[in-house]
Length: 437
Image 1: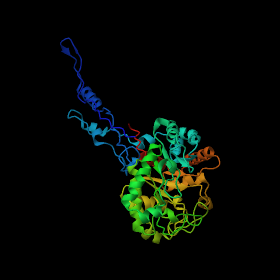
Image 2 (image 1 turned 45 degrees about the vertical axis):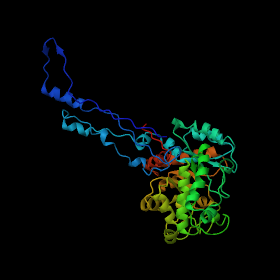
Image 3 (image 1 turned 60 degrees about the horizontal axis):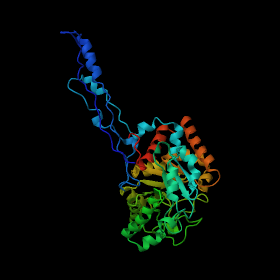
Image 4 (image 1 turned 90 degrees about the horizontal axis):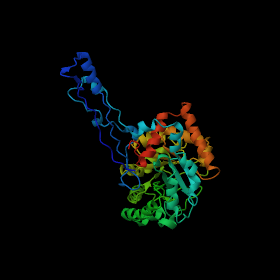
């Protein structure tokens, strides 16, 4: 939500007038006058609210690249001082309010819940009411045909968010065979078709039409576009995660088409999630079904990274991390790798937005020796901000187990609280939430 900031109000700093009795004024010592002046100069004006981030539905489509932890105090909130005030008054500067300063007052459990996206059937979104009421940061819709009243159901679900701070409602609406709600929003072809037959302008135009209807049905985040570079002319499968999901085997085509798709989503009021960093093109296997490796890092840097670089330069608000191991970049899946996320994506590429994991229920994660809760902790430690897992089993128990693992990790000093606050801040930023308003 966008809320206007409020104006600063500074306390008066003039020395107080002393009362008179009859025609005779009370005489006051010099030390007392100075003390009065000093106290009067230490007013605490209201701080200016931090400017809200902008990258989601209902506002300008340009995403925010600012991170709550990087916000600084407004100089106007600390510069108010009159000539009558002593020089020491300037040291009593008021600390500005930011999302980070507000989040620092939240419990570890509440912070942990904000980093979790809960899976739910699109035909029964009320199933996530308990988790949303407990502060889950988002929900992921599963299914292939959405109910006609999905929008009203989601509106009801959002009403349970603590503090009415908004909710990320995600789905996979890529195109072709990966569409959850085409019956409500219209259909898109496979990305491979778009890349081969549509210009970037046509991609953006057609995607905007779909995004507009998604937003009208209260879905505000799409786990797309896929910007993996993979020219294999086949449907995605257990052995090939991409195939027709990729716009092309040509890096330049993918870069242009990916940005066009991303901009189409934003123009329609939906937050796009660019995936799967650092690129699944040419992978040995589909990580959903078992251990998988990407092409060597030296190859990915030339072939697969440019589309992500283009998307970041164009203002990508969110990026999903792959569950594949990247040869030359570590032995853990990329979603659990600080080298992949913090060093490469955050550090070298300068990405400031929301980092989302691919599903931590993937067989590649368990094969690496991690349960879903343990993987969630490792993902956050590595620099991810939000964790996803699959629909199946007892979602409520799984959600609780993840939140408990995160809070225990903070208590046990295995996860820095500052990292958890930073992750929660990114979730709020992409949703436009300004806690200081």
